[in-house]
Amino acid sequence: MKLIKNLCNNMHLRARLNEHRRALYRTAVAWSGDEMLADDLVQETLSRALANLHQLQDEARLRAWLFRILGNCWKEYLRRRREHLDVDGMELAGEECCPEGDAQVHDTVRRVRLAIQCLPVPQREVVTLVDLNEFSYAEVAEILDVPIGTVMSRLSRARKALLTLLQDDVMESPKVTRLRSVRR
Image 1 (cartoon, rainbow, N blue to C red):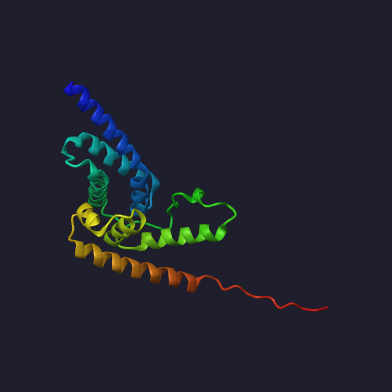
Image 2: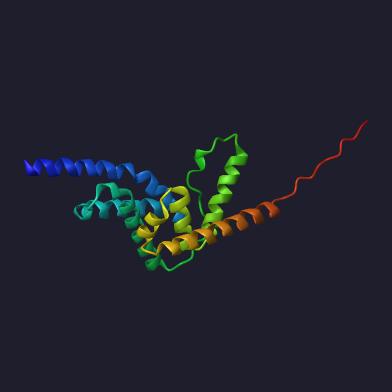
């Protein structure tokens, strides 16, 4: 009977793990700027989560636990690679999410993604966890294993940097030349 109960609980937790796959992927793409790398990071995250499911003490904390594993996978990747991300040749994830006819929305999404990629990694991590995934400051502090004050300062700096990057981008965009109407 105990075996059946454990099996049912594991199946339930596996289903819950799968529910978070999309949010993990979105975050991994935001951090890495690379869809294939994001797939690898999410796969590694879920693999580790399944292997260490017995360590999860409170099922209500599953989401934060998964994002902490993702953060650890990301940090390990950065340690192994020790290279800077190249945003010039980067493909943008989810380009198909915007309707083809809405070029302005598509352009805004593209500019925000590129601006996020320009942030230093610690700021990028915090801004995606707080603003995109709606984690609380305390949860982000736990996920990234940093003090809550560090989360707050990184988030503040990230938001200021994004504002500056996006404002500079608007200022540098080509000016529209207005044609005079000529009467004949």
